[in-house]
Image 1 (cartoon, rainbow, N blue to C red):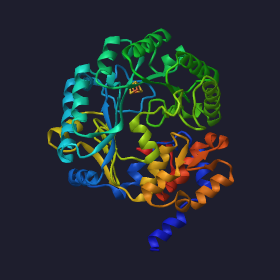
Image 2 (image 1 turned 120 degrees about the vertical axis):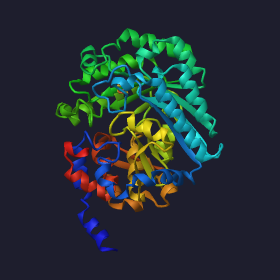
Image 3 (image 1 turned 180 degrees about the vertical axis):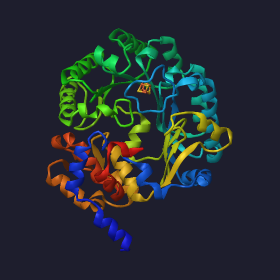
Image 4 (image 1 turned 60 degrees about the horizontal axis):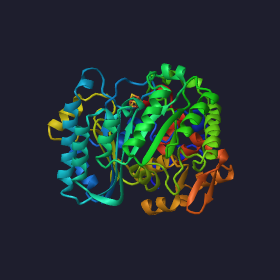
Length: 462
Ligand code: SF4
């Protein structure tokens, strides 16, 4: 072992310390890995002049992947929004933006050469992609699909808001593109909370109308997102939203814990305690499972369709198998063979650099990191907690090592504390573990990220 490796091991905190610190930083230690890529990954960053060739070589040996297109349009920015959404003058340049995305899609098709890669799914997210004209979405879908062989289980999913879904014709046009899954962000029905997060227009009446329209338009996979962990949200208020949504009867309901990091509500993290969010999740879990929705402990998406996890084809394979994914559009994220990269706009949330790069014939990439396996493992495992478990077989298939051999102390710690248990091919959260998920996840961080966690402060993530 080299001196550098020995030093790094010596400084890596013990599982108990990492766990406790994750609990303390429960607003930050979540499925979005890493906490601070700019700091922890700085030695892995590829210089700008080498990005185009690094992107090409990262995809060379990838045969199967998930696809994502980011459409950053929204009428108004929600207070808790953490995404890249166009604002100001750029918000008016929707047609321009679509042309740029089409050019980026074409550039990938060019390097991939024909339909040599197999796509398992396409997610169109944002923003509110359904705000784009149906004709634009049609061009985007056609451009993407023309470049890939589609897996037998291939499926497309799109996000919407109740306001946009109140337009039945728009939904029919979108459904006619072959998009069979739609996910609508309801978030809350509490009028006070709606006002405080800037979504006062999403009234119960609009939501009911939009649900009716989604069914009329013929979407056969329908998810509704609701949020918990909002500042000033009580357990009762969250439960009222969950009840309302369960009565609407979508195929799936996703409980989304509000991530305040980097949002306009970040200064209010102290108003949201871990006990509160755990009580909210537990109350909704009881209600939804009693209403015919199924999910294992710690899972976000509840499904009433037997054998269907409820997530999109793209996300399901990402979560379970750590499948490579290609994100196109402003600020989109991609993970290929050991390369993780963020498109332009991830930091600035503006189109100017994205436009410049696309028009210059480059990949519009802001940061590209060539990561060692321990970082890729941390990324895959963090995301796998969307489902509340790590699939041990998938881990071994991807990395050629057993989970228990790679993380012996961490696995022992979790089993010993009764936070996770082995269940066939799954290493799964227990009831206690689901309440401590923010302490569990960082146990699988890289050693660099564990050290970063120990010294992390709210202002240090930029
Ligand atoms: S609808 Fe979603 S993407 Fe749009 S502003 Fe609100 S949180 Fe952000």
